[in-house]
Image (tube, rainbow, N blue to C red; front, side):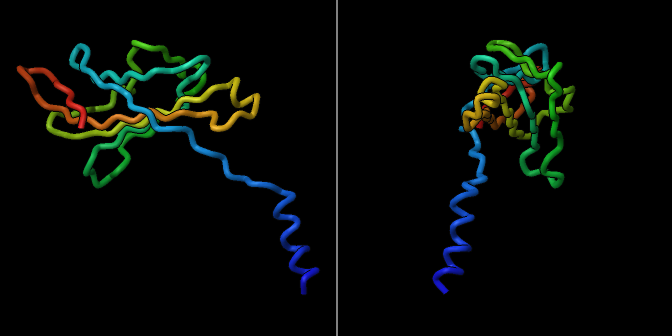
Length: 136
């Protein structure tokens, strides 16, 4: 009995943990530039955008846009707007955006977590004929 128990437990210790930790969630910023939604983050080093999710809060569809960036599109820097891929934002609605960035250097060195997440929740309103974004 003890031997069969050990035969079951030992392979579990040898194989190790397959859990890949998720990166931290950090705040993003939203602003309106030329009546378009502009998302801003603070990337570090060689981080590039891996994924962009935009959700309309309270929507039946839940996830209205999930954009996975290709390497040619993924470059991002501080102070530059992240493309929302012409998402049809509407005044009077609330949204959440999740931007995941990853580092190729950290991936190659097997440093975990190799990604960081930036999240923002905001409400759009009509303000003197233009859009206004308010964080919620």
